Length: 456
Picture 1 (cartoon, helix red, strand yellow):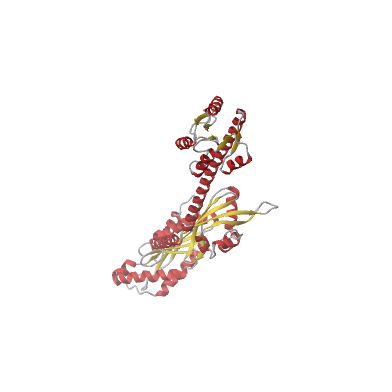
Picture 2: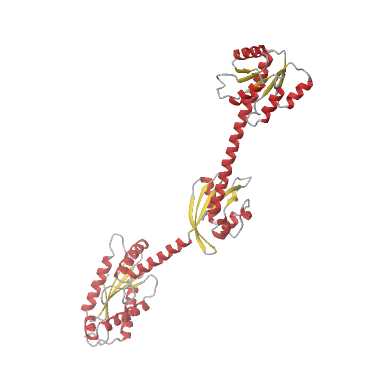
């Protein structure tokens, strides 16, 4: 078609007529009105020039030597590259037969001679307007087809991503109460195979259905209200949840607002979660080992210190007493020297086991405080309660009747005990409790051992 801009001319017209006066008359008139005009005097010349530079419209005479206008039109319409060029016959033939023949060959209009230039111009402009509209329509059709292709490719890509994703992906539409506007459930718009398998359903069974509230009752019902908040507030939601499905049981999801609903991505984190839980368990065991005495398997000094700090703060808030007993095995160095270290270790182990049998409350703690020294921490226990525990310990150790030939206290293993009791105060450090118990222990030793003493 004409490559020139429409602002430069009204259209590119080819006139085909063997009469020069007709050519001259039409050419001059159309040129004055802003058209670009070419003219030829035969059908063969017309076909050649059309192939070189196709016009916007052809004004074609019928009666011409060698090749008439009908034949020219027939050849044009048979050519795939030229058939779209509009042809207007302009002829002296006025019979209905001639006009019908022209239209049957593909002409778009028929003007009889003698013609009025105004009529020719009006018909040309009308056809050019139709032509421009057709071009615009063709361009819109091309754009629409391109958009459809892009949409098709996008849908195909989305389907490919959904179907191949290792994560579960779904989109939900809110279903609201028509009277209150509150969200009562969610309709499944999109769901990929991963989620469908997790809930032991097919995609067809889920898409378009109201089933989210029912499904969440199986997992964690409170998640439903959280998803409603995602839609109402626009704030995303991220959470782990437990749901047994085949070999998987731990999942992580992220939900974001999408229109009047939400999109959700769910990932199987069972393997990662199992590793995390195993690591937590291992860390807990390491923590326990770090706070445990290797010989007696009770708390060590570190474990005792951590518990003392925690209980001191707790009981200060509750205004409740905390009692500490420090216990020392009498003449233990002489025992070790005489019986040997293996026997000494066995003696300490028996004492630790005896202490644990007496001190049984969950909050109480028995710890190895030093070589042959033990600490008994008694939360929510008064001084009188601590004395009763100390008496039981002293009697139980005596009842063990572990021989101690080198002791000048008794010929069996005995212990000395120091007792201290406080209502903790955050303005004081718990070391004051240890210091007082230590002084009481020293006093018990000074008074002859195998006894308890108090310092509060």
